[in-house]
Amino acid sequence: MEAKELEKYRALLEARQAELLDVLRRRDGITIEKAADALDEVRLAADRELMIHTLDRESLQLREIRAALARIEEGTYGICLSCEQPIPKKRLDAVPWAAYCVRCQEAIDAQRAAEGTPSILEALLEETI
Ligand SMILES: [Zn+2]
Image (cartoon, rainbow, N blue to C red; front, side, top):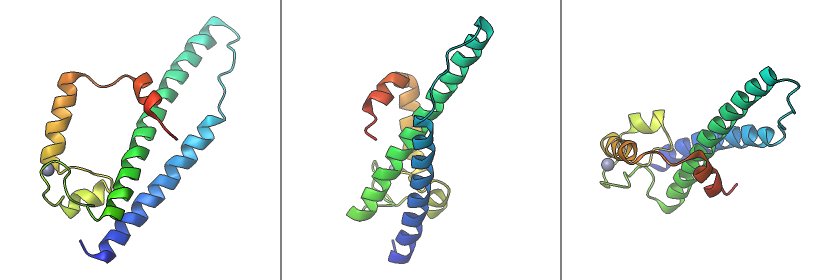
């Protein structure tokens, strides 16, 4: 891949990374209030659930972005980690942190679905930020 293109993807990744870090940092300040009554408690539990779910998704994406930036440094960016074929630019434009071509990604997703996705707690425990 040309240096000019690599810089374009690096800029996209860094912008998304900054955005995610900002969201995650702000969420750190959120405290769960003590519910005044039972109805509030149900609502707060649902909020908390949603928050954890979103946090999980964003943390995972942040990790993918960091891995993609590392691949730019290593000179392996844009190469599928599985079949080692170039990932089409159309896919990188849509998903700059893509580590696999569509075909390999689909195979991985299918395998993950069959195995069952890791629990939220597991993902949070892995989190290093
Ligand atoms: Zn592939």
